[in-house]
Length: 232
Image (cartoon, rainbow, N blue to C red; front, side):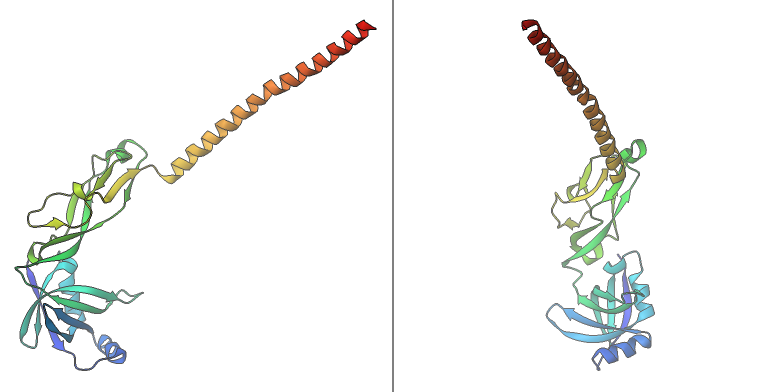
């Protein structure tokens, strides 16, 4: 994974009012910390930051942060965004070493159309689309492919089914489910309604013996009366 460079300037003024002023002028407030170093409050250009975080590596891009002449190898973390516009309003840059492993969240690319979708009424149900890995910063993959084309209805793929990637360790529970092929709820509901309808029809047919029994009972009562008459 290639590293990218980003210019940063030490921020001397603090507070929400100053942060709003920076955003209005095209800058984003940030904090640099980690590796037992003193935290630094900085600002970065919002357009340059956007470009850095929109490479193939995404939020896991290794960033060489140039802070007043000091080159700091870092990763962007704790990215905060405006609730409606989606603009980055603040973030942290974590100092890292290129010779030490770090943890990162990586997206899963589900590839292929499952057998249960092609041949049946199944739908793909994504349970988790992000996985946590541990690797050198330069070995963190931009995404992890997972072939789901052989899945039938009821099949599940788990963390343990992810491909082996040299230098990358999955830290989540190996038995954690990622994706399955299931029957749509509408189909299940329709089948349940059909089953209830069939049960209702069976109940109506089952009432006929009772009616026959009632008729038989009436006949028996008449017979008893006839016997009494005979006795007289």
